[in-house]
Length: 277
Image (tube, rainbow, N blue to C red; front, side, top):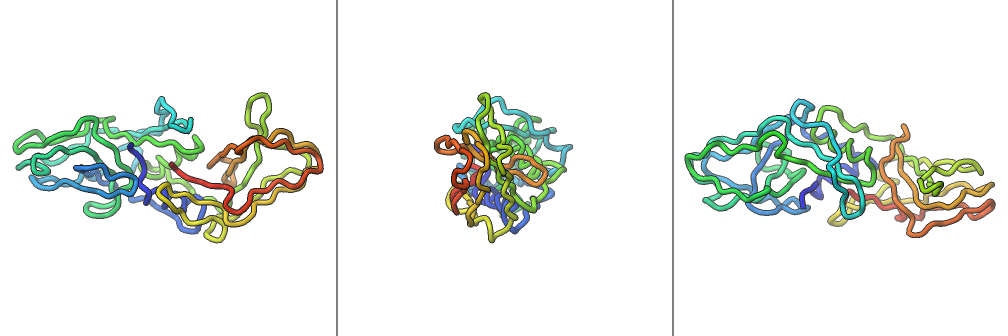
């Protein structure tokens, strides 16, 4: 499966929720691989025959605006995609690339050599490059970065942050909101002493990404006010930036009806889990 590497996911989680900021490289480099790097980003790059990575600046002129990918992922989340605006052409081969063996994947790297993979994907069809052939090329629209997260807003911001001109501002705080089911829609609770809980971003409040899918969670209890009126049928909660943009939403394991005078709702330490997978 194509996607972000674990390293890139960790950097993005840090940028959104923890202390460190991530400023992606102003120029990315397209590399060709002979094997699937997987989420760990274990790159097996080809060599020989005049092969070299191709530099592409992270700019609106080079990568399309995020657009709906026309599909949802396995969790029912909408995917968005960004693709190359113009053709990306490699040097003409003066000998067989990869020893004449098939090229199977490509990766978006953070350096002209070495470095870390940020995103990877398989070629539609593995390709063999022989000496004297035409310069290998990805036509406009051939390189597709496709991503889904728990928020349409965040997915588009992440794609822009990595590939395009406008970067994602680092939020100073995360605002946790409770969502009720009203007329079949998620609607934020209102009234009855309800208010969002504000948690400053930083290492003291959000855990470091762990595991293959880069999960992070709240370190401390997130405590809402005690209701002084019925809050309704709670079905999930959202994490928003200070401007009110949804960064993440998560359904509760089971709906909870909260009545006037009930115990104050809370999210225990580790109860909110964020992952880009």
